[in-house]
Length: 125
Image 1 (cartoon, rainbow, N blue to C red):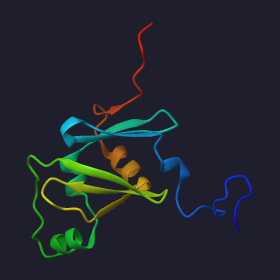
Image 2 (image 1 turned 90 degrees about the horizontal axis):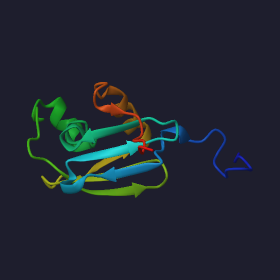
Image 3 (image 1 turned 180 degrees about the vertical axis):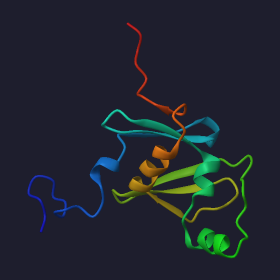
Image 4 (image 1 turned 90 degrees about the vertical axis):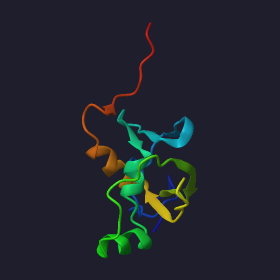
């Protein structure tokens, strides 16, 4: 049954609070900055995103102990929306199979050390 005000199934199949207000890819694709309505923001480095890909290929390589421990020099080359619940991220090493739900990216952002987790930038008066 859908909620009359939002048109979303009740309850929605994803966490609407996990959807960021802004997602900004840095110049050169070295990081993805996410900002949420509740004032939280985080910058996720491209290598962290690549290491945390959960696609079937990466999962298989982890199980078979063939997954690299690092992806030096990796960059995000494309970020495409997937419905309202996720983004598809492609990387400079040619890997383009990862679908990253917003809720998963929010959880990754919560793991970022406190120094890297930032409040929204405020303009000086």
